[in-house]
Length: 259
Image 1 (cartoon, helix red, strand yellow):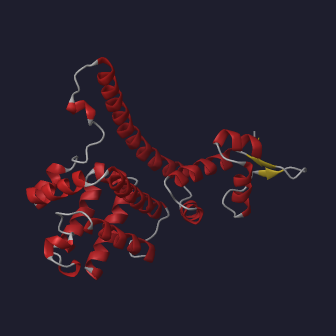
Image 2 (tube, rainbow, N blue to C red):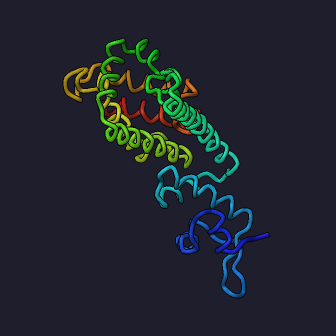
């Protein structure tokens, strides 16, 4: 069985023009073209389109999507990793939805608002214990004060930056790039710059003066890389253990050569 451009466009929430563009650039070929010139899509094409849409939702551009698809032919494995990430997001969003509903119901009925329930799914303090154990209570206090002092727009921008960095790492890992490649090392550079923007951590310029003379930033960066792999909560940000391993290896190389 196959489907026409119009049918797939309607089902996938896209447009026929978009599908034809994907064909023109070689990103998504139809399964066959009829005598009338119409494009038709079978099961293999639909699986590929699903992956394209998932990667697009992560913020990847079409060249990056083509790179990922071209370097990871095992569609079942790739979709399995993406599913794990989606399930994690589903859990987080589900907890946020429940907490907001609880607040609305309490406001409508005059009921008691429970702080423990209001902020489930919003907790930026998830890793408080790890931070304090590794880098001290002062490090956590500074980063916590920094976060709480930001406005809603600033928090949204920082969250989006974090999400995009994770998505780019996930895409790089899915495409099979080596940790010492230019692409992975550029991501490592961005990752360290992102870390430098968090007050209280060894990567913050305030921790050791200037960026070039930060305290044990090399140990901090490589240690984080190891933690990304060892802790499933962190690994989930990079597509799972395999993705986290690329992040770890790339950060280690960058730390040894640039920090």
